[in-house]
Image (tube, rainbow, N blue to C red; front, top):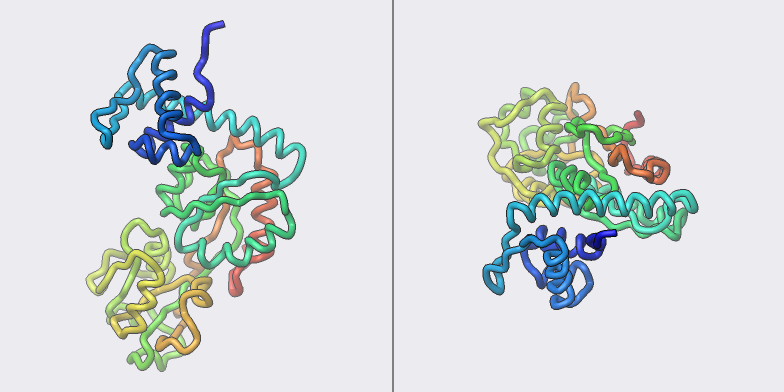
Length: 306
């Protein structure tokens, strides 16, 4: 039998390709830099090709052939992890490591209530969280960097298994004393005439919020685009405009006594559906459904059942 690359060598290669830095790759693989470098060299000698060009102490370039090998290596590593997961899933439910990707407009508002319940119900589960915007999260899932993802629909998920959990509406946040703060509900016409503060492009909440109340972007009255919900709340508190927030964010981001007013939207439909997604070929479907049940049982207050 001809010699074959080891999974460890492939892991070293993929990590170097992701970091483009031998030192950082070694840290992520929990080995010394010399061990990682030797592993890459052994892999190149075994295959008889150059996969990584070391142009300087700081600059690393993956060769065109190396890029192809990296993609194949990712698939092999994902399949190897699936083999291990299948064995574990057959023995104990929700045990071992589970890497969960989550978007920034869900994680801080959903997971704090779930983590203690998960530890109580499944003490052998080690849940690792990776926060990314939706597009990057799905890329991580496809590449095997995460096992499952928690995101907001509607969003194109391709061939992934989609397990909806609950629906959520959005509300308007206004500065205290704003001209519209005396109204019990706000209409689309009300929002047309105010400075609207929204998340920047790339955050799906922006589109979900606008569509929920019949608005479309980009809009002339979008005065500011922020990178986080917390920044939006601070801008509103300083009297710089109005924003739209998911209901689950209110207990976390809007403190008691903050100079802001919360108002529901007239005629708005639920802005988004929170769902758990995973690769169709994953052997841990039972685990993910159990995790979904745990999420539903510990959903933030005010969520709308499906």
